[in-house]
Amino acid sequence: MTGNGLEAVHLSKSYTIDSRQITVLDDVSIKAHAGEFLVIEGKSGSGKSTLLSLLSGLDKPDNGRVVLAGTDITGLSEDALAPFRNRTMGYVFQSFHLVPSLTALENIMFPAELNGDGRAAAKALELLRRVDLEHRKNNFPHQLSGGEKQRVAICRALVNRPLIVFADEPTGNLDSVNGDIILQLLLELRREFNTTLVMATHSREIGAGADHVVRLRDGRIQAPSAGHPDR
Image 1: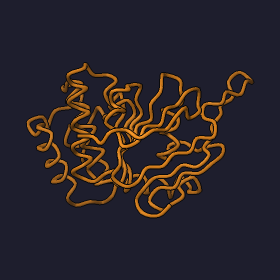
Image 2: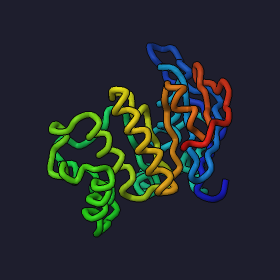
Image 3: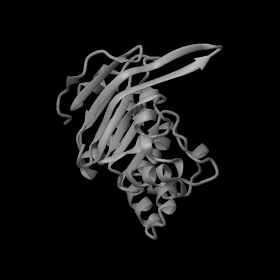
Image 4: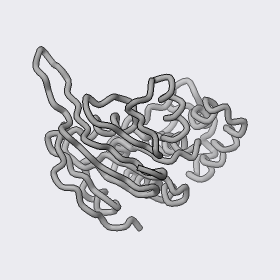
């Protein structure tokens, strides 16, 4: 696949538990073009998080391949994959995954500093302004609300202007009001940065605003479908 899109072909993943082999994903193929919003939808245990881990290179498939921006990441060593991930991908997790000992500003700066970006602080501060959290820049994660933590996590995911952002149930630990705010913020910033957004969720309401929806059930694609353009 050419360009800055994402393509996964025939992905399978199994784990061995107490001498039993458990198939988590079975022959899953998906595609997202640059700038699209792709939702991976399914109940708990359907394989959503595993698929996101494979797509982002955090885990390796037993079979199949993942191509991102023309690069087959399944064949990369960890030494090559780590800097590639940091340059081209961002991550937003359900449980935030902020570094407790770093301030909000420092958490956002961290991926840019890994890239040796001399403008890491300026970029992080601009993103904090963008999400109305400049006044929280020196606060540590334990001093932030859940919604504020997730806004910081979104800024961290975007600080390197990644080609693609992976979001794993990003509203799962938030109440409905904050969940809606975070979702709209992600969609707004995705349009602004022209970033491909791949989101795992159990919510069919979120899928209604996607360019494409892939529904997983017991590790297999149930029915990919076109969604409605997000507004």
